[in-house]
Amino acid sequence: MAVSMAFIVVYDLREPMKPTVYSIAPFVIIALFLGACAPSGTVPNTVPNITMPKSETIAPTVKSEKHMIAAANPLAANAGLEMLRAGGSAVDAAIAAQMVLGLVEPQSSGIGGGGFMLSFNSANGEIAAWDGRETAPDGATPDMFLNLDGKPKPFSHARLGGLSVGVPGLLAMLEEVHAEQGKLPWAKLFQPAIGLAENGFMVSPRLAKMIAGTSDLNTFTPTKNYFFNEDGTPLKAGQNLTNKKLAATYKTIAEQGAKAFYLGSIGYDIGQTVREASVNPGTITSTDMVAYRANKRDPVCGPYRTMLVCGMGPPSSGGIATLQILGMVQKFDLQNTKPGNLQAAHLISEASKLAFADRAAYIGDPRFVPWPEGLIAPDYLKSRAGQINPAAASGKAAPGMPGMTGHNKLGISDESHGVSTTHLSVIDSDGNAVAMTSSIESAFGSRMMVRGFLLNNQLTDFSFRAEIDGAPVANQVGPRRRPRSSMAPTLVFDADGNTVAAIGSPGGSSIIGYVAQAIVALFDWGLSPGEALSMGHFLNRGGAIELEIDSNAEILKKPLEDMGHEVKLKKTTSGLHFVGMKDGGLVGAADPRREGVVLGD
Ligand code: GLU
Image (cartoon, rainbow, N blue to C red; front, top):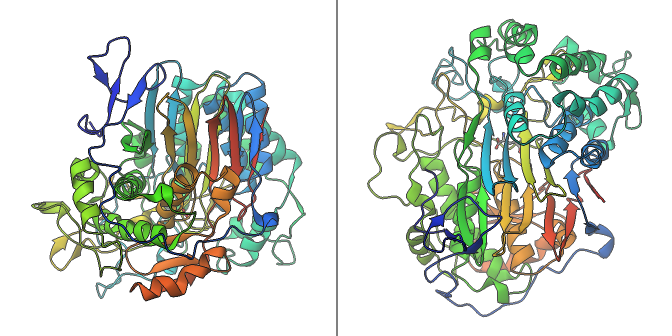
């Protein structure tokens, strides 16, 4: 079981002596966080604070009464809304929106990739974590991303072609969730995407920019033919684009289900394309496709102030790291700091540094590398928070679980910094909620296309080195292993059991910081969703503090340096999407850095 009863207890008021976890709706949560709110260090509430950006750059906060979806593209959000209006569940809306995203935002996600979903089922109060992560084929080896001299291949080379492609998991996961929580027929969910693929849609400015900016996108002929005009120029924003091949693929899957993908000729074509790639051929076979299974897992949950926060456990590091950061900073009095206050940025950054040290050491595929559940235990987080000096930066953080052996021993992991991926959030009129992050890893994945969709390069999320300084790395490559992710689809519940946040973001390992900062901004600083998603980012992924360049966060550079931090200015293209219950209705926001919208009734 992924959640320890010791730190979050949910009392059923009808049976007060019988605590339960994961069941929210009819219950009142009493979060017992021993000493959690007691500040263990105080620093003057120093200026400066991040002032909010100019009002024209703050995303609107959208309100609705019945249902709401936030997604990275208006056509996708609209497909989701159409399902909600037709009486569909949050899961139905998420699937319809995802199919459109695979068409109109193909650089980010699709059925050639994977994803994770957190779902809240209002009928039985269950919170579930769905794992549709790509899986390494049987032919994968620990040294597959090393050159003959034993050094890691350059990332840009390793991701290109068949070697980096994991067996896609998105479709298997969606079909399983639909079987449990869908209300509309599976085939109906594909209709908006099929219509758009056949009749065409307008290439968005972001898609056009990414096509033009991806130098190796013309490596493989099917991909080149799709994203470039006949004269070799990249597609421009506003051009009408059809995808007849994807329409045909979606029709087959709509009629026959995911088995047409895993057991049929689509799966065969994926294997053949991967194995016969002209660059970096891989090993996926039909056997690998047939063997794929999505997993329904326990969420990882923990208290934040008076709320319950639930996220995705391993193979994603997203949920654990987010909970660790929140668990550490709740020992401090952030509620009384101003948004983006220097002290807050320092504390969140130090907590994040500690969380990333644990992430590197302990998180891999849980089937092969059991993760220490103590990582999110209150006592552990209390002691980790005690390592934070409230007034000055510490040096490099070390992982904190004593006595870990074997696979979980030290050993840092290589990092990739994806800029694609997508997140959508939905709440329906019955109170069902979905937070789903899906991905093909890098923008345009492996650059290879099969039947109208791109294949992922998710296997480059593994550590390229299986061993460092003689110690095995938790996130090493191997047959049927799932690469460690940072995706952090998250659901937050208040003490009355309301889903006050369904949230997540793309952004590689920066996702963890984006989500943690947004939760603090929403619930400690009381910012509106639009403000919370628009404020400048401050991140720490284990080294320097990264402040969002050209944002209001830049103001913190000098004062953080004065506290001893190394500070870098960085472009941080988050894509946070948020929907939450508030005052009997719903509120939502979409990150102004991408093309998302919020729609509802
Ligand atoms: N592959 C990354 C992960 O699973 C996501 C990449 C991105 O967000 O751009 O964590």
